[in-house]
Length: 337
Image (cartoon, rainbow, N blue to C red; front, side, top):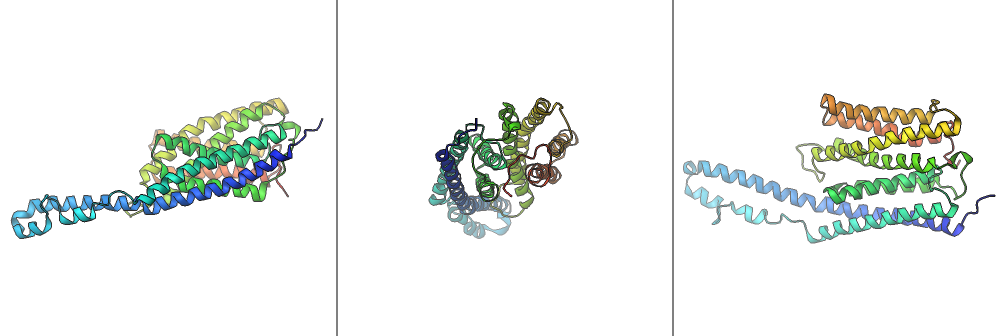
């Protein structure tokens, strides 16, 4: 008996995803405002205070040689350089940037809720798991990436990533809506299995974390040490990227194993060198090489980030290139022609 699609829920899902794109873009703008006008002011103030403290210490050592008049000009009554009281005072960001940062976080949560609602209504409209084609898979990965950011934001000060994560999610959802969207409906018989809830869910969660790590790696290469920047230090970016990969790698490993078990149930073999299987394994190998290099050879910094970006490129090719351009047993992405 053919599955009846609830057109009302399907339309609502499409509208929710479109609204989510707009909310993520609004959040990105707020994050960007806080990043551009909030952090630099604090960083400049802190830099001035450190510089003035150094000058004060040097002045104290050479005060006898330069004379009391110089010291009187350089220092105020409180023993600090006069400029420190004037220039060092605005250490806190402007009030409107604080409000922009708070609005950004609120908008991100609203976008996250809209993304989740769009996924749920899509699944309910066709009475199945809501990642049976390429469009639904990309929507779910964007949701996973934002979820990973929000979860880490609760525990770590990584708000600086907000502008880049929300922009990535908005672009991903926009790409899905413009080029991958298909009407809600039943999936092909091969996907009528409980394994879709196990294998694909694990792949989605791992991909979302890998996207977060990829964003950090790209920013790491953009960030130049020793130069003023609104971005955090390379050390902070590398730490977030490494933690995301450490968490996501075992989940991706489970997804590969679960996929092999599903293949045995569906096709009677665990491994058949299908293009999707090959690139999922290649992605696993490169991320494993990254973790191995850090753990045994002590790779840090630029070299490690480049390896992680190679792995991220393999992940993207596995997601987009294999599904769209290469035929195989996994060619059921249902991409519009």
